[in-house]
Image (cartoon, rainbow, N blue to C red; front, side, top):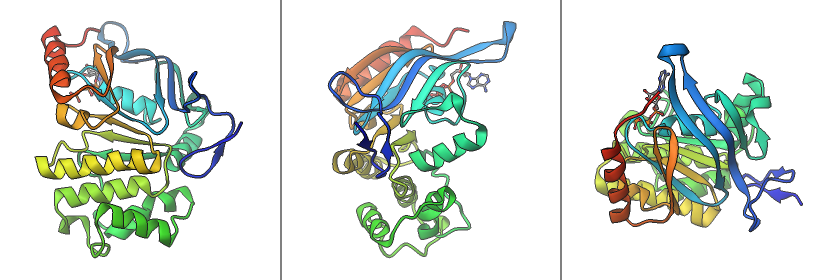
Length: 267
Ligand SMILES: Nc1ncnc2c1ncn2[C@@H]1O[C@H](COP(=O)(O)OP(=O)(O)OP(=O)(O)O)[C@@H](O)[C@H]1O
């Protein structure tokens, strides 16, 4: 059976779990080691984990537990030292650097703590940049719908420097949505925002999952942010130590406090 991905392309036989839910990103036997010999640092030793299509996963854990490394390996920004990553049905290890870049541009959206907008481009140009780079079209209707959803009507000609932090992050979300990615990866998307603005940004990510069946994987330190997710994966020493369906804020904070008490990463 061929199943349409969120961006409308048809992927051949995407993997799925026993209930038939498509797997958007699948990691098998994944490890990431930096350096060699005595100076080697094991950043990630996560083994097998699947992230399912149309779901919102938060990744949490103490500083140095491997969250960013997991995100980078799963998104094809970094290559694992061992194991395989399949993104939208494709084994990333088989791709050349050029093909990997292409795969990222057409299948992945990114939202970072520092917004990472291009300062010389206006809002409209920033939103359309990924589709321009991917050589695809984000048609006028789609652009208008995304801009309306993130509440940036009337701001399209502004440069990033003319926007508040929350507005800049909304541009970044619109930019991520513009290619209808299979997965949106977020690294501390609310880390630079006040509580009210953070809630707006998290609501937009939640809507992308609920209304568009997008897949969101978000690294965060914030239990409130993580409580917007369907699933919270806790890392320690590069490994999954807990994997909970939609725990509340109090349970998340409790888990984090216990992990924090366990101490740092071993090599
Ligand atoms: N390029 C690198 N070279 C050597 N060690 C690295 C490198 N990148 C990450 N590490 C180490 O790998 C481990 C995991 O790092 P990672 O950035 O994934 O953790 P994290 O959970 O995202 O941390 P934080 O919450 O502080 O951002 C840490 O011990 C880190 O020092």
